Image 1 (tube, rainbow, N blue to C red):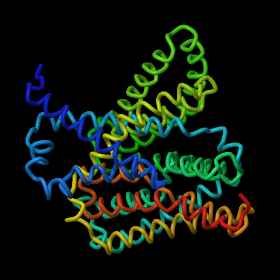
Image 2 (image 1 turned 90 degrees about the horizontal axis):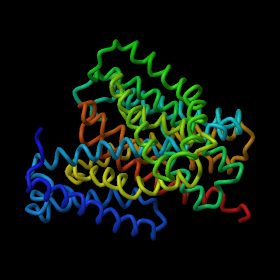
Image 3 (image 1 turned 90 degrees about the vertical axis):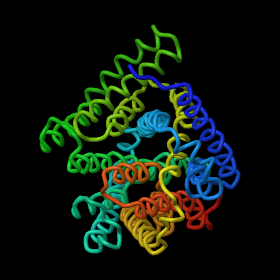
Length: 411
């Protein structure tokens, strides 16, 4: 069995240390500027990557991130695990009973907020694929990917914004969160199908993969959830707390992730769906969720977000026209779709506009989709940079735009 050499271990530890330190510093700065931590963590990666450090301190950058293939491979494995855990945490935040409690409003807002940006994100890249940067893949697949990337709302970012604005427990807050939850589930189902078309290695046919994916999702959200409800009380009673629930939840998260990876879709989908089933259980305490959140969001998530900046030179691939086009499509599709859905559901124009702005927050989801598409050659580096910028801009502007839409309402 091969193992890392002495110098490989040193290099890996220096990589992890520099990434975590930079992520913490920039996350603190972002929070002081009333921005989500993820914004600072992505900027930290750009600073450590070829864009800044690679330009002004190329020797240091080469030594840390380019000179040692073995440690880079180990770091890539850690980052892959971080992505899986990040989606597991996102799934934990989905509360299915909240979706049902909002009823028709959440469904209308979510579906229109998904369909309208999906259509815009599909049509323009399909007819102007050269401008949008089609890689080596199929034009239809490329357009389906961009439509999906435009339509998924970043649930963790939305929750954070609503909490900061003291709107989380209000009727508007609940309908935005419920709409974002439905968005996430449907969006990831669509993307799982797209991944199947990408031709990942699988022993199953395309239709078998899609069929088993849908069955897996239905099972986890019904019978799987019922099994979790029966098992969790026993775990809480008989195993050490919080060690028992932490280790077992992580273990089953990795099993679900391995299953969907074997299916020929991505491991992140299995982690997300298992997170939804586990997080919705009445026996999964808020304290246990908080421990998992703190562990993953402060250690593994920063490693992933910093790694984004290490992959690409953002300055060299910064195409302002492409970025503006992506921003216009993302803002127009989500605000018009979700806002019109809220207006149809009985909200005033200003409140409906606020719902649209709230649903417009993107984040980790689009970036993860972008990285996968980039790795498969479906998109080029310029489009990936545009998607990262879109995620940053929408995350940074969602809260202020909501405040602007609600500016005349009493505190």
